[in-house]
Amino acid sequence: MAMLKVVATWSGGKESSFACYKAISVGLEVSYLLNMVTVGAKRSMTHGIKSELLLAQSEAMGIPIIQRKTSWKDYEKDFKEEVLKLKQFGIKGVIFGDINLNEHRDWDERVSNELGVEPLLPLWEQNYTKLLEDFIKAGFEAFVVTLKANLLSEKLLGHRIDREFIKELINNPNVDLCGEAGEYHTFVTDGPLFKKRIKLLEVEKILNNGYWFWDIAKYEICCK
Image (cartoon, rainbow, N blue to C red; front, side):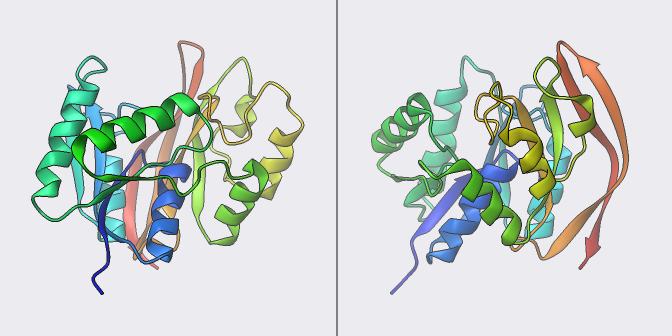
């Protein structure tokens, strides 16, 4: 029996990576990654990660990535156009990394239904602590690359997602443990999806508009 071919929405962070991993674990064939980037095509729309870093992830995993230039105004239209193109190559479903925001799930399901593909949300309503612990146990390596300066300490910028990180956040009532409200974002450099790993060589701390950024300036793709 042929595996269901799907495309995974891709931000470069922990949720999109773990959702992709879980989909593959239950027998789905992730044929493409789909990432929406700014019109200048330099950074992803959701996490602000440099588009070249997402290309590096694609190369390290061996899964092709499609990067579509868009704006928030045209996001839905452009997203639909890309998925419709992929349907011609046998794509039957779309993986989303949402956990608990109903407005996000409503969008995922509505758009997928309009396109005639199946919306797949492997992380939906999972316990936050268990989700992060499972992510760590699976062998993923991810680092905090963005955080809200008024909610989280600068010392967490560049911190690996590990049990120490969970302890730092779990007692903070102002922060969603998985950063679902945009409190922080991550970048994944290695894990069970990766045939090679991304080694970070040079980063720069930047404070801009109330956010700390761990801007990755140099990296290399290495054999494991």
